[in-house]
Length: 235
Ligand SMILES: O=C(CO)[C@H](O)[C@H](O)COP(=O)(O)O
Image (cartoon, rainbow, N blue to C red; front, side):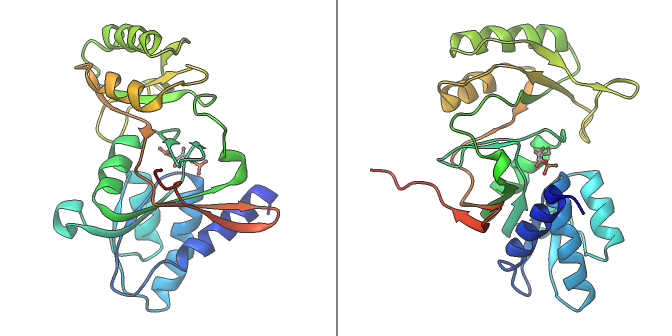
C-alpha cells in the first residue's frame, strides 16, 4: 500500500468515528471518499444500520457492491452527515472540488446535510485557492460561448488563465447529469466568494467547484496522524 493510500485509509477510519447507528449519510466521490465507503461497507456488513445517498454513479456502484443501502436524496430527505474529499482546502475551509466531475451532486448533497465533513491528506491544504484548475459544470448548449464568459468573469474577479473543456475518452467529458466540465487554470483566486457569485450569474454555468462556508470540519491525515480543522470563528 502506498503512503497516499495509507493516509486515505487513516482519514477514512477517523471519519467513520463520526458515524452513528441510524444516520442518513451523504457519500462523496473520489479516491479518498472511496476509502471511506470501503471502511463504512465493512461496518455495514457487521450490522451497522445507515441509509446513504451517493454523489455519483461511481460512488453508488461502489457502495452497493459493499452492501451499503442507497436511497435517493428525495426519499432520504435531510441528511445527518456527508463525508467527501476535496482538491484544495484553505485555512477557512473553503474548497475547490470537482476533480472527479461530480461537483454538482456533491454540492447538492452537502447542502442537504446537517454536517459536511471533508477528508483529505495534507497535500490538499493550501494558503490560497486556485493552483488546482477550478472545475465548473456547464450546459453543453453554447458551451464555447459560456467558456468565453467564464474567462471574462474570471478576469473581472482578478483571475486569468486558460478555460478549457475537460476531455473524456470519446469527446468532451460528461457528468452524471449529462453536462460538460470547464477546467479553469485561474491560478491564485483573490476573492473566491466574489468569483463564485459572478460565475453563478452566467446562464450556461450549472454550478462551480468553489465550496465556500460549507464545510463544518476537515479531517486531515499527515505524518503525525489525523488532525481536525474547523473554520475560524468570525471576529
Ligand atoms: O471533488 C471531487 C470529485 O468531484 C473529489 O472529492 C476530489 O476530486 C478529491 O478526489 P481525491 O480524493 O481522489 O483526491
